[in-house]
Structure formats: structure tokens, C-alpha cells
Length: 258
Image 1 (tube, helix red, strand yellow):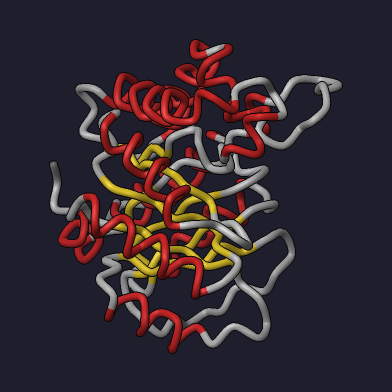
Image 2 (cartoon, helix red, strand yellow):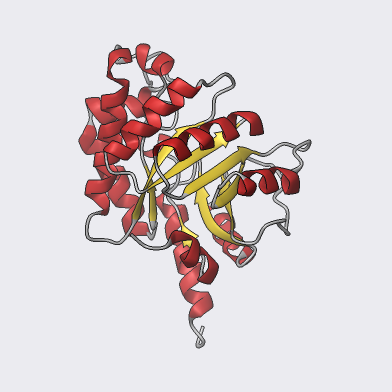
């Protein structure tokens, strides 16, 4: 496995985007929440194809299709008893897509308002068993919940952790990043929803930035924030086309003749 932290110090690394735009069907059945994650069991070929498209676009970190696959969301699709199986399968699918490419598999767990230690332990443990090489704690609504999940991760494995908070105007980013790094988070990160202002300076170099809802051209422009950010990825409405645009921007910036 690559030394991720060292890689982030030397160049910008691209993570994949969100799954919804490539996987959600037209006129989706209710409930929608958890529908995308359920495809790991109901249509694994579609998930594998989405991973492959991200890799071909230039992503070097693949997030498992498991972000909001909690007991509650899976129960809405008749899969409440298959929580561990789904997370294991999600990691296996990303691992299969990444094989031979050098890309890393990040086991993805999104934040909950009232997540429990047992819930995080079950999900993170199954992702690690399935082959996740690092854990991505994504878009957590509170620092308290994120620190709880991070400590659960530490109790299970010493792999790197990407720890991202949902941005809000009241969030004290320097203090949040300080606490996360003190608790062993290798990569603190922020998730920016559509139309939120992205700061031009960051309190921690080599941090991660995950955005949603912008055009491929505007997403590509975010590569100019390196080296103040070391990891760039997306959420909803960020597709392989966005990743490809960012990869082109990175390549052009390294070409002295461009």
C-alpha cells in the first residue's frame, strides 16, 4: 500500500465523486435513502462499472458504495439483516475494480446525528474485512460524532483515516482540524454542499476537500488550491467527467510546454 500521507505531501491526489448521478434510476422507488448503497447486493455490476469509470477518469482513491448504509436505511429495502454483508461486498467491489491500478480503497461511512459506537464498529469492521485499505468518515454533522467514529476505527485497525466534517458558517475549522489530528486523523477534510463558499486558505496543509454541485470546469479549478489541500474529491453531482477535468488540469499544470 502506498504511504498515503507521504503522497499527499508531494502532489494532489484525486478521489472519486458521488454515486447518485451514475446509479440512481429514473423515477426511483421509495424510499430513496439507502437505495444506491443497496445496489452493492442487488446490482453489483452497476457498482463495479461506476468504480471503473472513476478510475478511468483519474481517481486514485475509490470510496466504497456504503456511505449511508445504516441498519435503518437498509431496512427500508428489505436488507436490514445484511448490514455486514453489504459493507463487506462494497469493499470487495471497490477492491476488484482497483486491482492492478495502484488505487486505494477507502471504506466509506457517512456521519449520523445519533450514531452509536456499536453501529460504527459493525460497519467499519465489515469494510476492513472486505479489503478497505483506509477509512473515510464522510460528511459528519458534528465533531463529537466524528471523534466517536474515529476512535472506533482506531480500536479496529491502524490504517489511515480521512475525517471530513460538513461545512457550516459556524464551524471553527482550525480548532476542529486540531482536535482531529490530535486524535490521530491523518487527513482532516471538509465537505462543501452546493453553492457554499470555499475558502482560498486552509488551516492545515494537505487537508482534504470534497465538494458537490459544481461544473466540471469549476471542479478542475480547485486543483489550484494545492499544496494547501492534498486531496480533492466530490459528493453528489460530481461525476467521472469532473474527475477527468481535474486530472487534465493537473497534467497541464505539470507540462512546461503548456
